[in-house]
Image: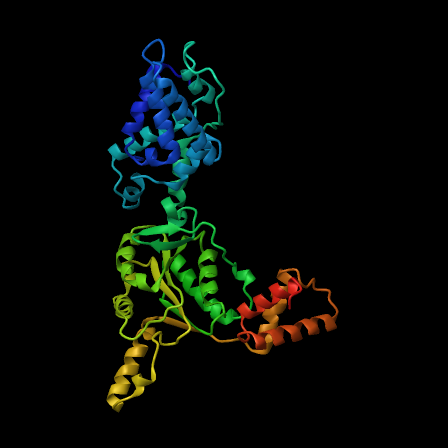
Length: 420
């Protein structure tokens, strides 16, 4: 794109005219680009830059280069990634089938503007600081700009939006709740299903329920309870990750954030994805208000707002409430009422799956598979070597917290480093 001062000024005005992407200038690159172009257009008075403007325009170029470097070093490729995320007012209306001719025309005008940005020549942009002898003549950072087809990029987004999502849900599977916002967890350390050993029957139930959720069918709320270290939360996260490409996302809550579920569920109702609302290590104290909040949510069937939400929870307690001996004191009627109330929450989950500590043979199978995965075993060892490793693993489990996948993993890690 060949720039004149008139075309430069027109680009500046187009930043203000963006209607479908009004938050573009709030991104680091968009803000820095708008600032530099504005400085360049305003500082030139027809023949030369006023002396006072030189520092400001050089500084704004430096900030623009830094923002582009942080975004990968190529403006066009950054623009492509930005458009692919779909941070646009257009998409919610598109998903509701409420796109008007005027809105479509505005979208096309915005996309043409992004095309124009991808044709800007960094050297030509920088030349606006060198228009006369008193302007800046020193070295300047530069960057790349790959030409894009914004309309094609956005059309591809629309084609896959119902499984890939848009905005923060586009490239991330896992999220947490922070105050009133959802925060992506892009680098979550998640094991895949083929890295999980043992508990195949239990895991298959979770996987089938997640498959139903991914398919837009009615899925059950799920409670996974049992012994510590048996892989309950790992199973939930692995199942969610397995259906990422089919549109499943996982949002993790703390127990004290339960009361936020209804509002969040309502806000997600029109998002074209499926969500697991996950509460890990769920246990309530007696008369905990969050207990009654979650019970009300399950009774009201929060996923009734659509087929795109299910609640998954893990707990080491079958009935989720810490029960004291005093709960069993008093008349038979009082005891029965107390125990019924204690059990009432867990019964609200449509699917309950028990994870018990594995028997010796299953524990050693888990350990052997982990040992091969971690390179402790090659598969060609002498039977006596394998038997010795099994004996050491069993002895470690006795000294530790008993048999479990967690114990097996701890043993293999120590053994690989010569510490067990």
